Length: 228
Image: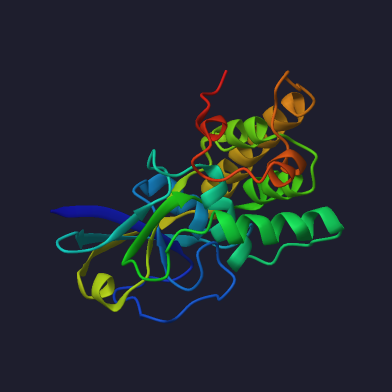
């Protein structure tokens, strides 16, 4: 089965190179893509620089996939992977303890798979995650925040096998004047919704302190709660 994916970049990339990229990306070194060509264009431009949405067909045959949106996982699995790869500013003892707890009890086996899919931690999502491990927002609020602004899902190629099954289709130019503005509007919308709802504490909300104190694990039903 072929899956059409796109990669936003300032360059036209016909043959992505395995093992190349930034070490401190969300899920470590990999090739970061999306199924949305519009999102790829937003990711590919700079404030005063045009970019490209590179388009590929990915043959999914025999590839192992870690889908962090699968019902078997919760938002803390995603956050655990993020904490192991992104550079977080852990300014408090609570945040440091939270990182240790989450990476110990919620880390999926993400290093051995061919592909990872999940949320993209751009500036907004990253700040939401930092607020959670600092004890500012609850688990429910963090989960809700991931849906604000439709900031995007990503598909990350992690293995040589995945790279070998990727075929370049073409590239579309993304004009900075149009797509950088759209990216900022999307981000601003998410932040605005987040700050307007951040103080909406509900009875029974779980905070990181309670999760650690009660030694809550991934099979706890409270982590499967539906948004209200």
